Every structure is written in structure tokens, then in C-alpha cells.
Amino acid sequence: MNKNIGLIFIALAILASGCVSTTTISPVTSGDLIVSTEPIVMKEFQEQQISVIVLNNNTSQPIDSVSVSSFGLFTVLGDTSNINIPATKQATVNARIQAPAFDSVEDTTMLTISYASGLDEDEKPVIQTKNIPVQTVVLPDAELQFVGFVEDIDNLLATPPVSTWEAEKGENVTVKFSVKNSGQSTIPADSLVVYIDIENELIGGNASFNITQAMARGGTSYTRGVELPILEDAPNGETDVSVTLMQGDYVLDTQSLVLKVKL
Image 1: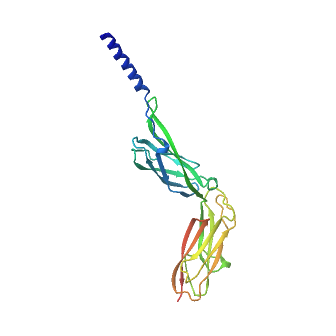
Image 2 (image 1 turned 180 degrees about the vertical axis):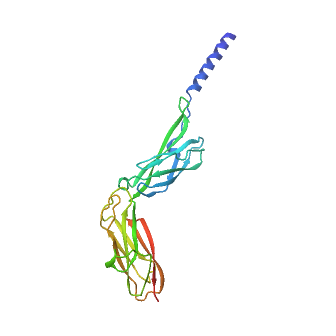
Image 3 (image 1 turned 135 degrees about the vertical axis):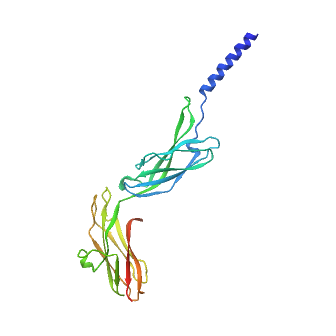
């Protein structure tokens, strides 16, 4: 009888040992995570730091080694934040990215978060991923150059531009400018606009100019100028004049000048 009891205990011990060796811990699923980040707006091939908020909505298990593993055509530079997030808690994961060419990106790019959670049958961490769509805008790397006041529209190249100008009421003032492509990709013709705006509307108005030249890497537009009339009853004193380069609704570059109206 005692011998039989002993055999039963040995059998139970073997079974218990087998159960432990094959037990797995179910990982936190991607559906348990709530991930968000701000829309991305940047110039091509430039670098930018991004922050991604990750909420571990699982009620019992943490997630480990949370990081940004990929972001479509954007390059994830170096090591990103590698953090642990307890159950029901949230944390911010930081990463540094570099934009691709401006003409290669869709309006939405999938960002992938990777994390370790649970153990497999070999007791190794299970690597999981979570994908979220992020609104992305990549702009051409264009900038203003040779911006300032000049004597008149017929002498744009005769004298260097100046940042401050004094004029009489009722006169026209001339602002000149050019655009340079400092990026790597060709900028199509008629895709950029320069806006010139007198801040004080009681002194004068505004104007705009379409850049009609396509510009390859290092290319420039023609030097152009616009005339801005000063109102006959304008108040004397100073006002800022902004010169802004835009593509659609996005500002690529801006410079500020000062206009002085005589008494």
C-alpha cells in the first residue's frame, strides 16, 4: 500500500513538472494599447524629434522595451526611447526621425510601436507591434533670398536690398526677393507663392507673386519685385512688412522688413 502511494506521488510530480514547462503567459495584445501622436509637418531630409503617447490599457500585465520601430519612408535615427509601461499606465516614447523627399510621402504614414510582453514556450519575451496612421506633410526645402527694399521696380539688380525704408504718403515702395531650392528634390513650377504684407492696414495693403520657375537642387528663381502703394492718408510712423514664402497653406520661410512713413 505504501509502495503504491509512493508511485502515485512520483506520477503527480512528473505531471506537475510537465505543466510548468509548457505554461505560457499571454502577451498584451495591440488592441490593449492606445497610441497617439501629433501630425508631422517638416521639410524634406530634415530631422525632428517626435513624441508618441502610449497607454497600456491592460488591467494586469506591463509591457516592456516600448519603442518606435518604423515610420514608413521616414528614417528612425539611432536608438529611440526604450521604456517599460505598467498595466493601466501611460508613458511618452520619444524618437528622432528624418524626412524623405517631399514628393514621396502620402498624407498618412503608418507608425509602428514595438514592445515586449509575455513569454513564449521557451520562456522568451514575445515581441508585439502596434500600428497607427499619422498625418504627415513633407515640404520642399525652399527659402527666400535677396529680400529687401530697393529704389524702384526697374532697378532690382542695381543696388543691394535694405531692411528699412522711409517713404512719403502716397508713394510706392518696392520690395524685391528671390527663392532658392536648398533641398534635394526638384520643385515644380507654379507650386510656390511669395506674399508681401504691410502689417498696418492703415498704411498700405499686400501683394503676392507666383514662382513660375521649376527649381532643381540648388536652383533659384528669377529676382522679382512688387510695388506696394502707401495710402494718401496713412499715419506717419513705422510698420512691419512681412515677406512670406508658402506652398499651399504651409509657410516655408518668412522675413520681416520695416517701413517708415514720413510726417
